[in-house]
Amino acid sequence: MAKRNVLHFTGIGSAFNAPFGNTNAYFIDGTTLFIFDCGESVYARMLKLLQSKRIRRVVIIITHLHSDHIGSLGTVLSFCSHVVPKPVDIFYPTRAIERFLKCIGISDDKYTHHLSVPEDWNLSIVPYRVVHSNMIACFGYEVSFKGATFYYSGDAHDIPDPVLKKFLDNKIDLLFHEATIDTASAGHCSYTTLERKIPVSERKRVYCMHLGSEKLAALLIKKGFQIPKIEVP
Ligand SMILES: [Zn+2]
Ligand SMILES: [Zn+2]
Image 1: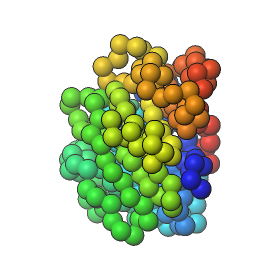
Image 2: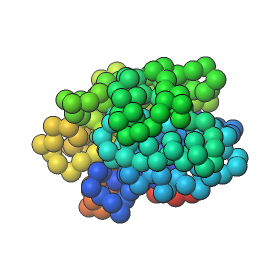
Image 3: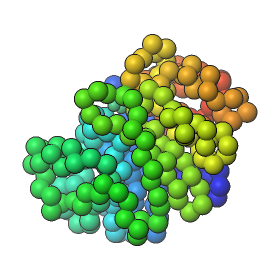
Image 4: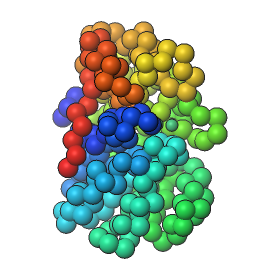
C-alpha cells in the first residue's frame, strides 16, 4: 500500500477553472466516505456516493474557507440531513467554520465539528498552517492511513519545510500539492517552486492539483510530475 495513491479526485481545477471542477479528493474506508474540501462543483460530482447505501457516514476535511473549497458544503450538509440521511463529521482546526455555517443557515445539529481527529476514524492528521490568504486560516494536512502517509496541501504558497524533509526522507509517501503557472503568485505555489524543491527522481510521488489550465497540466507532466485523473463516481 505504501506508495499507492489512495485518493480519487472529482476535480483538479483552480477556482475559476470550471471544466476541471473544484479541486476535491475522496477515499472510502469501510462504510465511511472521507472527502477533502467541498467546493461549488463537489455536491453534484459526489452525489452518487452521497446517495449510496454502502456509505453510512461522511467525513469532510476542510483546508480553508474559500468558496472553491466550501462552496457546496451547506448543500451537502442539508442533503445528508434531510434526504439520505447520514451523519456528517467535519474536520477543520478552527471554529470559524461553525460561524460560516450559521451564517448560511446550517444549524449545528446537521454536523459534528472536530478540531482534532477522533480515534475511530482510523487515520491521523497533522495540520500545517500554510501561507495562502491573510483573511482566513489555511491548512495543509499530513495524513496517515493504513500504513501510508501523504500530504494534501489545499491552497498554499509553499511546501512546509518539515513536510518537504519528510517527503525527501521517504517518511511521507506522496505529496498532493497545488500548482500555478504564475511565477510571482503570493498565495499560490508556482510550478517553479515545485521544480526547485523536488528532484526529478522524486516527482512521480508528487501529484499536482488546483490547476488553472491544460497548458499547466501539460507543462507539469513534461517536468515529471503527476496529475490526478478526474473520476466522477
Ligand atoms: Zn482554491
Ligand atoms: Zn483558496
